[in-house]
Length: 140
Image 1 (spheres, one colour):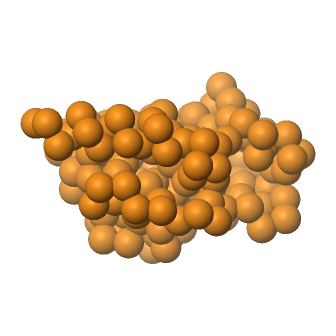
Image 2 (spheres, helix red, strand yellow):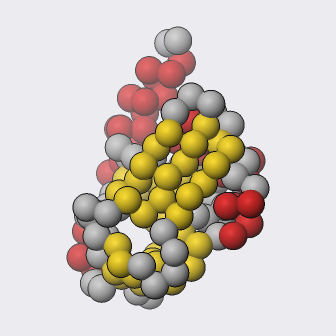
Image 3 (tube, rainbow, N blue to C red):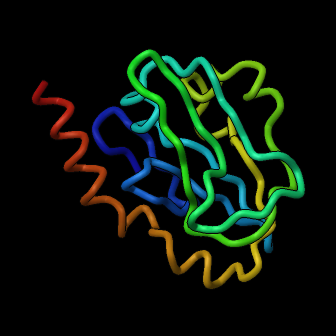
Protein backbone atom coordinates (compact mmCIF):
# COMPACT_ATOMS: atom_id res chain seq x y z
CA UNK A 1 0.00 0.00 0.00
CA UNK A 2 1.24 3.46 -0.87
CA UNK A 3 0.48 6.30 1.55
CA UNK A 4 1.87 9.58 0.26
CA UNK A 5 5.44 8.89 -0.81
CA UNK A 6 5.77 5.95 1.58
CA UNK A 7 5.38 2.27 0.85
CA UNK A 8 3.85 -0.24 3.31
CA UNK A 9 3.99 -3.83 1.98
CA UNK A 10 0.65 -5.61 2.43
CA UNK A 11 2.19 -8.89 3.60
CA UNK A 12 3.79 -7.37 6.71
CA UNK A 13 2.34 -6.58 10.13
CA UNK A 14 2.97 -3.23 11.81
CA UNK A 15 3.33 -1.38 15.08
CA UNK A 16 2.26 2.04 13.76
CA UNK A 17 3.17 3.92 16.95
CA UNK A 18 6.79 2.76 16.74
CA UNK A 19 6.94 2.71 12.92
CA UNK A 20 8.11 -0.91 12.86
CA UNK A 21 7.28 -3.78 10.52
CA UNK A 22 7.15 -7.49 11.35
CA UNK A 23 7.56 -10.44 8.96
CA UNK A 24 6.58 -13.81 10.45
CA UNK A 25 8.14 -17.03 9.18
CA UNK A 26 6.60 -19.68 11.43
CA UNK A 27 7.61 -18.83 14.99
CA UNK A 28 10.49 -16.56 13.90
CA UNK A 29 9.77 -12.91 13.21
CA UNK A 30 11.97 -10.36 11.46
CA UNK A 31 11.66 -6.78 12.69
CA UNK A 32 12.56 -3.63 10.80
CA UNK A 33 11.68 0.04 10.45
CA UNK A 34 9.04 1.34 8.04
CA UNK A 35 9.88 3.73 5.21
CA UNK A 36 7.97 6.44 7.09
CA UNK A 37 9.85 5.69 10.31
CA UNK A 38 13.27 5.95 8.69
CA UNK A 39 12.22 9.20 6.98
CA UNK A 40 11.16 10.68 10.31
CA UNK A 41 14.37 9.52 12.02
CA UNK A 42 16.68 10.98 9.40
CA UNK A 43 20.04 9.42 8.58
CA UNK A 44 20.53 6.53 10.98
CA UNK A 45 24.17 6.15 12.00
CA UNK A 46 24.11 3.63 14.85
CA UNK A 47 22.20 0.42 15.60
CA UNK A 48 22.59 -1.51 18.86
CA UNK A 49 20.88 -4.89 19.23
CA UNK A 50 20.51 -7.47 22.00
CA UNK A 51 22.75 -10.48 21.49
CA UNK A 52 21.80 -13.93 20.24
CA UNK A 53 20.10 -16.03 22.89
CA UNK A 54 18.95 -13.05 24.94
CA UNK A 55 15.37 -13.06 26.19
CA UNK A 56 12.82 -10.63 24.79
CA UNK A 57 9.76 -9.35 26.66
CA UNK A 58 7.55 -6.27 26.24
CA UNK A 59 9.55 -4.62 29.04
CA UNK A 60 13.01 -5.18 27.53
CA UNK A 61 14.78 -2.92 25.06
CA UNK A 62 15.53 -5.12 22.05
CA UNK A 63 17.38 -2.58 19.94
CA UNK A 64 18.18 1.11 19.74
CA UNK A 65 18.71 3.38 16.77
CA UNK A 66 20.57 6.65 16.72
CA UNK A 67 20.31 9.45 14.18
CA UNK A 68 21.24 13.11 14.18
CA UNK A 69 17.66 13.89 15.28
CA UNK A 70 17.14 11.39 18.12
CA UNK A 71 17.97 8.15 19.90
CA UNK A 72 15.19 5.58 19.91
CA UNK A 73 15.00 2.60 22.25
CA UNK A 74 12.61 -0.07 21.03
CA UNK A 75 10.58 -2.45 23.13
CA UNK A 76 8.48 -4.96 21.22
CA UNK A 77 5.11 -6.52 22.08
CA UNK A 78 6.72 -9.96 21.82
CA UNK A 79 8.04 -12.65 24.12
CA UNK A 80 10.83 -14.93 23.00
CA UNK A 81 14.52 -15.02 22.25
CA UNK A 82 16.86 -13.24 19.83
CA UNK A 83 18.03 -15.81 17.28
CA UNK A 84 19.88 -13.43 14.99
CA UNK A 85 20.60 -9.80 14.35
CA UNK A 86 21.52 -8.29 11.03
CA UNK A 87 25.27 -7.75 11.26
CA UNK A 88 25.26 -5.90 7.95
CA UNK A 89 22.80 -3.32 9.35
CA UNK A 90 24.85 -2.98 12.54
CA UNK A 91 27.97 -2.31 10.41
CA UNK A 92 26.12 -0.07 7.92
CA UNK A 93 23.04 1.47 9.64
CA UNK A 94 22.23 3.68 6.64
CA UNK A 95 20.78 0.53 5.00
CA UNK A 96 17.70 1.23 7.14
CA UNK A 97 17.31 4.50 5.22
CA UNK A 98 18.06 3.17 1.74
CA UNK A 99 16.27 -0.23 1.93
CA UNK A 100 13.90 -0.23 4.91
CA UNK A 101 12.01 -3.41 3.96
CA UNK A 102 15.01 -5.58 3.15
CA UNK A 103 17.21 -4.23 5.96
CA UNK A 104 15.72 -6.13 8.89
CA UNK A 105 17.24 -5.45 12.30
CA UNK A 106 16.59 -8.51 14.44
CA UNK A 107 15.03 -11.99 14.24
CA UNK A 108 13.18 -13.27 17.28
CA UNK A 109 11.87 -16.75 17.98
CA UNK A 110 8.54 -16.02 19.64
CA UNK A 111 6.90 -18.23 22.23
CA UNK A 112 3.42 -17.90 20.73
CA UNK A 113 3.24 -16.67 17.13
CA UNK A 114 -0.55 -16.21 17.06
CA UNK A 115 -0.58 -14.23 20.31
CA UNK A 116 2.30 -12.10 18.98
CA UNK A 117 0.49 -11.43 15.69
CA UNK A 118 -2.64 -10.35 17.58
CA UNK A 119 -0.71 -7.47 19.16
CA UNK A 120 0.22 -6.06 15.76
CA UNK A 121 -1.80 -4.52 12.92
CA UNK A 122 -2.26 -5.29 9.25
CA UNK A 123 -1.56 -2.44 6.85
CA UNK A 124 -5.33 -1.88 6.54
CA UNK A 125 -5.69 -1.59 10.33
CA UNK A 126 -2.66 0.73 10.56
CA UNK A 127 -3.61 2.85 7.52
CA UNK A 128 -5.35 5.62 9.49
CA UNK A 129 -2.36 6.09 11.82
CA UNK A 130 0.07 6.19 8.92
CA UNK A 131 -2.12 8.62 6.94
CA UNK A 132 -2.34 11.00 9.91
CA UNK A 133 1.43 10.91 10.36
CA UNK A 134 2.04 11.58 6.65
CA UNK A 135 -0.42 14.53 6.71
CA UNK A 136 1.35 15.95 9.74
CA UNK A 137 4.72 15.70 7.96
CA UNK A 138 3.44 17.29 4.75
CA UNK A 139 2.14 20.34 6.65
CA UNK A 140 5.64 21.21 7.88
